[in-house]
Length: 461
Image 1: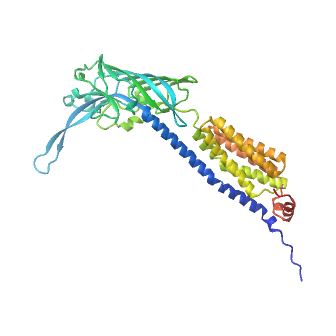
Image 2: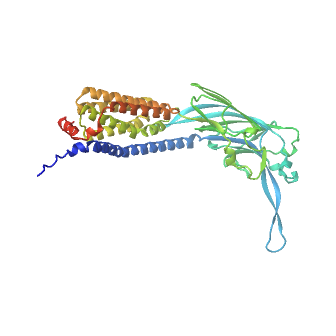
Image 3: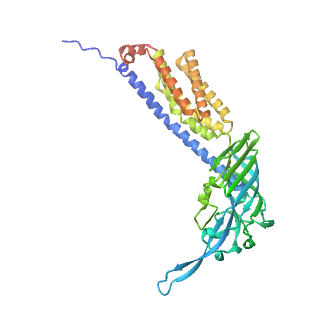
C-alpha cells in the first residue's frame, strides 16, 4: 500500500494570493470614508457659496456694466388678415439701437474682505468715469423712414447686473446739458436692470456733429467687475488695491501690472474685435449675445482651500495603496506578519488626514494646515508602527516614507500646471524602487512550503 503524499500547507500555498486580495479589499473598503470626505468638501463649498450670496445681497453682487446704448422707438405698419371684411392695417412700435462711436471708461476700485461666519468674501467699491460720443442715428441703413421715428421718446440706457450696488445719484452730461438717470424701466430696454435717461432734443441734432456724453458712477459689488465693448473703439483703464485679480472674459487686457499693492490693467478693443454691429433694430441682438462679449477682472481669494482639498483627496486611494504595498514588502523582506486589522487602522489614520486638512484649512492658511495635518498623521502612524513592528529602524523608515509621500503630495497640489508630469514621473520612480527591492524575491517560493514554515516560525505582530 502506497503512502499518501504529504500535503502542502494551505497557508503557504495561498499566502501571496490571499494577502494581495486582502490588501485590495481593504483599499476598496477605505474608499467609503474617502468618498464621504469628498462629499463633505462639496457641502462646505456650498456653504461658502451661500455665504457669498448673503454678502452680495446686502453689499452688491457681481457687476456687469452694459452701455450706454441710445434707444429710439419707431413705428411700422402690418396688415392683419380678417376673417370677414377687408384686411386691417395696424400700426406697431419697435425699437432701434445705436452704439457709441467711442467709449472710454476709467476707474479705481477699493477692495476689502467681509466675513460671514468662517468664510471670507472679497468685495469692492469702484468709482468710474464713463465718456464718449454718439453720431446722429442714420435710420436709412436700417431701412426705416425718418417720418416713422419717434424722436421725442429717445433715451439712453446703461445696464447693470445689480442696481443696489449703485452708490450715487447718476447724472448724464449730454452735449453740455445734465439729465438725471434713474432705474425707470422703459419699453424696449435690453436689460432687466438698468439706469436710463430721456433725451428731449435729439430730433434737432445736426447730422455732421457728434454728441458727447459723460457720467460718473460709484458702484459696489463682489467677485467680478465686467464691461462690454460697445464703442466702435472701446478703452477701459482700471486700477485697484486688490493684489489677486483674475482677468477673464472675451478679451484680455493689452497691458497689465500686478504687484502686492494691487493691479493696473488697460483694454483697447476696436470694432473689428468685438463682433457687434454699430446699430440694429428689434431683437436682432439680444442681451445674452451682448453678455458674451463681456470682459474684466475677477476679485478672487489667492488660495481656494476647498479646491486644494478636493484635489488632495483624489490621491487618497493611491497613497493608501502605496502604504499597504510598503507594509507588504516589510512582511516579505523582514519576515514579519502584520495583521489585517493593523493594515486597516493605518489606512483609517491616512483617511483622517484629509478630514483634518479640510477642517484646519478653514481656520489656518492652507500651507500651515497641511503641515499640521501631515505631522499629526505621520506621528500617529509612526508611534503605532514602532509598537507593531517592534523595531525602531523600521518605524523610522516608515516615517521617512510617509514624509516623502506627503511632501510629494503637497508639491503636486502647488504645481498645478505640472501636476500630471510630476505625478507620472513620481509613480514611475516608485515602481522602479519596488521592482529593485523585489528583484531577487522568488515569488513561487513565497507561496510554497518553505515560506509557510518560515512564516510560522516568525513572530506575529
